[in-house]
Amino acid sequence: MMRLWGRKSSINVQKVLWCLAELGLKQGQDFERIDAGLHFGVNQTPEFLKMNPNGLVPTLEIGDLTLWESNTIMRYLVKEQDKNKRFPADIHAQYGSEKWLDWQLGTLWPVLRPAFLGLTRTPEAERNYSAIEKSFQATNQLFALLDQVLSKQSYCSGNQFHIGDIALALCASRWILLHQTFSDKTGPRAELKNIDAWLKRLEQETCYNVVAEKELNIVK
Ligand SMILES: N[C@@H](CCC(=O)N[C@@H](CS)C(=O)NCC(=O)O)C(=O)O
Image (cartoon, rainbow, N blue to C red; front, side, top):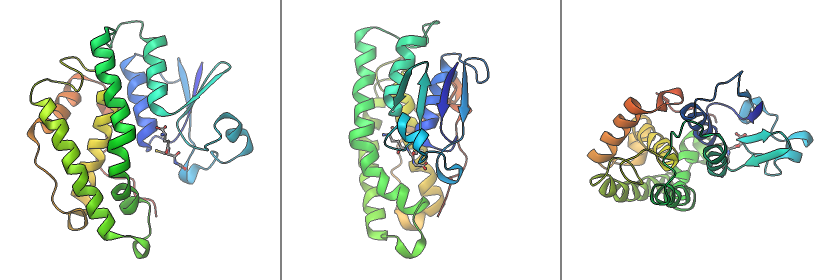
């Protein structure tokens, strides 16, 4: 049985949980999940650091193979565990999704991260509000770019859902929740109707609800 290390509130663990659900893999039957990270601790123990020297979640053990980096874990799961062909495997759909996975990790998250960490993980007295607003406003622009793409197609890589959508949607939900919770600190959120419609589609047509959060997990 695969063993997934990581708390359910982590955006990166949520990617993996959503992907596992799409593949029809069940907790207790196909995988077990062990809480780790933040107040659960565990992720800085010598045993954990042997598996993942970064001390971060998610970390996935599959027999003698240990994986970390949430997008890599999703890629692995799709390649090895997609028995029911939930995700399209043709080269256009696959690499159409790949480019968004890299964009999420290399472009979108680094821009959104200062607002996210600043407002949810940093004590009030230590917050840099100008950096937080700048980060949030720059994220508006990146989501406007995605919104343009979604004006022409239903999902990020075309008209079929793929793991790129999972990584992007979980960032979009943080962006929305940050604005709902701290609108006086983030400044306005761009109104992007194609993003809204895409999130609604994901709620209706995929397993998004296994991880969708109604409020931010604020730990300071
Ligand atoms: N690029 C990594 C980032 C992993 C990461 O930053 N994980 C965070 C949670 S989202 C973490 O482990 N933080 C420490 C903690 O929760 O204690 C990935 O995509 O898996």
